[in-house]
Amino acid sequence: MKLIAYGGLPSKNSPISSREAYLLAIKSRFITGIAVDLYYTTHNQIVALTKQNLQRLSLTEQQLLNKTPEEIKRTNIGNMIKIHNLLSLNDILDIYTNQKTNDVLVLDLKDSIENAKFVDEVLSLIKIYPWVNIYIKSSSNEINEYLLASRNVADFKLGRIIDKYNKVDLTSNVDFFSVKGNILSKEEVEELLNRHEIMYEDVDFIVDFSNLVKTLGEPLASRVSVITDIVAMVYKNYGVTL
Figure 1 (cartoon, rainbow, N blue to C red):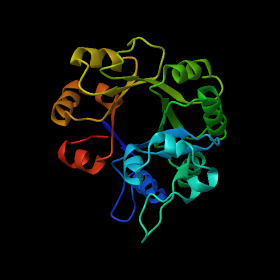
Figure 2 (figure 1 turned 60 degrees about the vertical axis):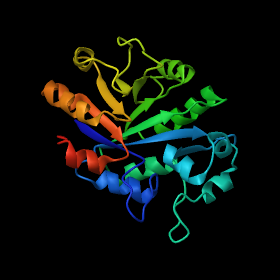
Figure 3 (figure 1 turned 135 degrees about the vertical axis):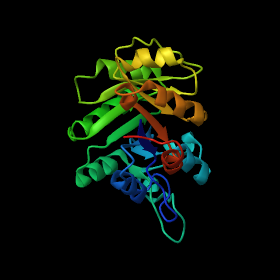
């Protein structure tokens, strides 16, 4: 099983989604990637952050989307002692390039009133960074269909989200499934892993999940990742093997 740090690896002085948190995750020996949520603002900015950022800033998604580029750059996700500003997708891709890392970068494209333009902007940008190992998913069916039709535009792995509201076709022509919750049987997991990678999110059944991974055995277990913002705890307590 592999660990993907949602928003990077925060520390006492480096909040989630900060440049330092991303660098700490990339340099960590037990983390194999970073996951971020991407939002497309009304001023055509692609901003990367997490649910925790929105909560800490007391912002709704719509309030964030309405910010100007100047306001986005000044948005502080740290504190007044040490300021950490929001990063763009371009900023994160530059970090990956400068660190010369093979870690995966998982991008979750959040719904936008301009979905086609949003996807086009993302694909145009990642095309400039073909060496970055990028995975893209979205809960928006419109974005998913647009991505599926655009796979020859840029090099990326496409995923579908499965949750209790969205039990998608498990034979879908995608590279990975992003699973939220304990909604797949062991038999379904084994069947999927023969064709796809699986990324688990929001693992609130961590003990059962850990036991499931252990029973899979190699090489199937190596095709399972967990996306979490508590990577250190998961690694320490549940015997993650890379």
